[in-house]
Length: 246
Ligand SMILES: NC(=O)c1ccc[n+]([C@@H]2O[C@H](COP(=O)([O-])OP(=O)(O)OC[C@H]3O[C@@H](n4cnc5c(N)ncnc54)[C@H](OP(=O)(O)O)[C@@H]3O)[C@@H](O)[C@H]2O)c1
Image (cartoon, rainbow, N blue to C red; front, side):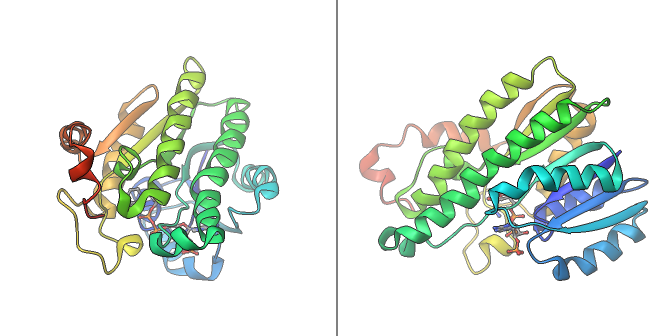
């Protein structure tokens, strides 16, 4: 059994790999394979059996199926697949340059549903049970003027994932849908942390806890108390909401 990380340089996925790698084969699929040497070493020190690195560009949709086949050929059945690639993008640029808006939509929505569809089908065909992790976000809960392009992809992805989780109900595959708030890391570098911010390690711990304890698909607010703020967010009048910062 093995762990597959799609987005090998992701802060959050690196932490998940570190927490789950002991005794496992790990496949790191990364857009920049040369940037995962440090993580490979770290995973070996933490007891990973073998670590394989594959080149992966999420926007090359036609390669998704082959990539999963390659991962299975390298290290056998996949027990945990983490779909961690994503970009925040630049909202201001995306408002005037449709090619950037399309880039955000492609990486954060189209490529996600392509990969999740391939994973769901290929993991269902395995003999053993497995889990897929997908990353939604508080940004998709109620679109904000300040980051509505990214937020809209997360809203769409979250809806897709809720349906996929239902489709997987009763199968050997479960979907863990993570809905983090602001995560202090590479993606948010230079930005002021929002209320209830967490670190990549906190997100990883919540996901890995669900992986070890939940028997069926689940949706996780991270941190858990963000759920309350999320419901309050829905009640804020639009005249105030449109002035909310990112
Ligand atoms: N950070 C947050 O505040 C936050 C909050 C809620 C949800 N999330 C979501 O959580 C997930 C993981 O985020 P993170 O914080 O770990 O982000 P991160 O550290 O910035 O990692 C993002 C990863 O996506 C990869 N990537 C981007 N475009 C790609 C492409 N075309 N093909 C292949 N890989 C690509 C990056 O590769 P390179 O290193 O080569 O660029 C990197 O490995 C994302 O879906 C994100 O939207 C993040």
